[in-house]
Image (cartoon, rainbow, N blue to C red):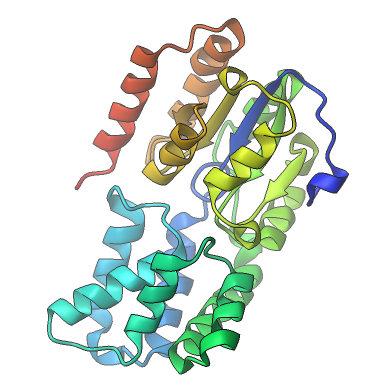
Length: 280
């Protein structure tokens, strides 16, 4: 499994780009509820508002159309909600400015912004993100793939190159996939370190794939938007219906991609199903 395009060789006519958290690995809820939100409360001293922050964090990252956004975008939304309640987080505007103007929301980009601005709040944001990565790494043995993933990946990889396109930490993805024997089915990983999912898909397209022969698989509207930005097909893994979604991918969506019958009408049907699964 390659970690950079210098190690990657296009082998097949078709390409499947695939999110990991909440799509392949059953990790989303535990990462958000036991790591990211508690660490945000700790680092930014939000204990007095813990119940509100916890509820809002789950809504933003698990149950609504914002599911799957960057961890940094989530922080901006939380601080905006606190501000609407009259609770000001000192320096929160520094975070919002960086999130709204950065070309990529990655650790490297954040470090450059800290070096440029000297913002203490951005330093806290980096402290929070690094703490999340450390705790997630410690939790890894508790994560497992969703039912049906192993067989689906095996089938996909016989007919298509497979790229992991995720907003999660790259080393964590590689470790999780290796632990459960999935790494053999992935040709390359794009984690949060390399920028947006849309850019990662574009990078793969530049390797010579035709957009009509490329599919993005994910569990959030952000994955669908990344696919649309590159003119490629999108197949959702519906939250709470993962096993069913993997069967549909294997038995229905993949054959349509291979046979050139993945129609706009079918795409609209899949998008409607994801919107229905994510209320709000």
